[in-house]
Image (cartoon, rainbow, N blue to C red; front, side):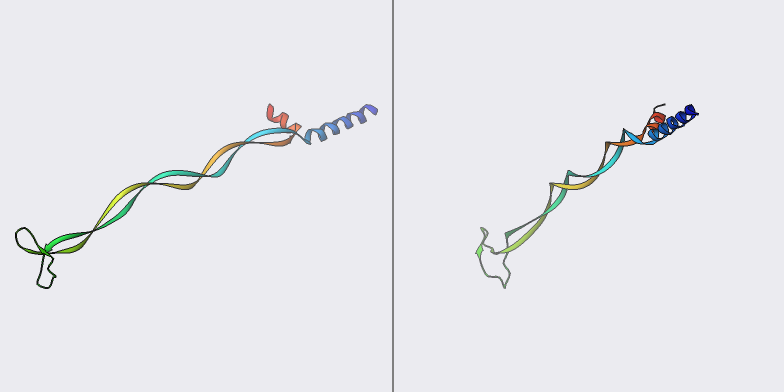
Length: 116
């Protein structure tokens, strides 16, 4: 009778100890995080220049001078517009992933089962 009681007590102790979370087991997990990335972008830039251009004078224009052939001329203001392209550094936020190691406590029984 005492052997049966001792056997039952040992089985209960093994079951309780086997299912208690005692052992720390490492596992990897993929974690997302935000990062800043620098890239080059080509953007158009507007360039406007104003210059004076010599044109023949009309009847209502103010006389400003004569050219070397003796023709009457005046100046007109002209605006030229040009686009040129320029590389600009910009930043954007991107989502990246990395592996991280975490630890969790598992019961000894589960730990032993995963080893075999």
